[in-house]
Length: 358
Image (cartoon, rainbow, N blue to C red; front, side):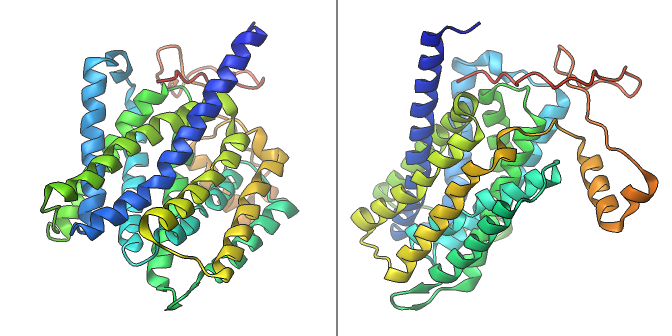
């Protein structure tokens, strides 16, 4: 049984980790804008920061965290899939960011929490009136954010940023629901590796855009690399120690950090309507913490059965056939998924996943 002192220390570590992740995420678009100003192409920036971060993380694991290199095949494949999804989203984000102010880009990207809510519904949640209210507030916020001081927002870029948030939410959902038994440094390493491979393919596919041409141009790339690693590692630790709702509440700080940094470092300004949109978006995100259902996630289900259940729900087949979707068995002691002839898992709730801190 954990002592009160130990629990307090764990909570404190989670708060500091979540705060550090929030600051890091809020500064990423600022450094990217500085890299653009130095002559780097958006896709080149996305590729360099991801590949360098993955390479540095591999070096750290090989030198200090060799025990976190072990992973079983299904978890490895899931990490690569999550990384590929996030890699595509990263390309969309950095291309869209090139034509949108950094603060506004971060505000639009914050809609990823609404996508994560919808993905949670696919995994067994039901939409409540509060969920519909949050979605409505999100749409109002986008409408308020679509105008700038000099004219109308580039809607193509705005849609790229919203799509990037959706893909980011999907990658978090894959990791959260499939890799709950894998240590966070391991998840970070292999997910970032899959992400790096994806952005390299994208970089080559568009014709190898320009990289930084000066030493000064590499400085924001270096900062992007370091803060990417910090944000990834501390985010998982914050979720482990604080839980989903509190971490989502702290994530509001990403928007505030991005806005303050954009005003101070880039000279950006928001209109009164955009400040109102930011407030509405903040309210929409904060209301997630009032969702009781999100505080207790249902036991994980196989991916195929999730969409099979959705199909039956939409067609009415579930009611006619009385079919039931069963929860999967938890992984065995060695991390491998149980075979097709394994005995059925007991009906009690699964244990709380233990994720080792980096």
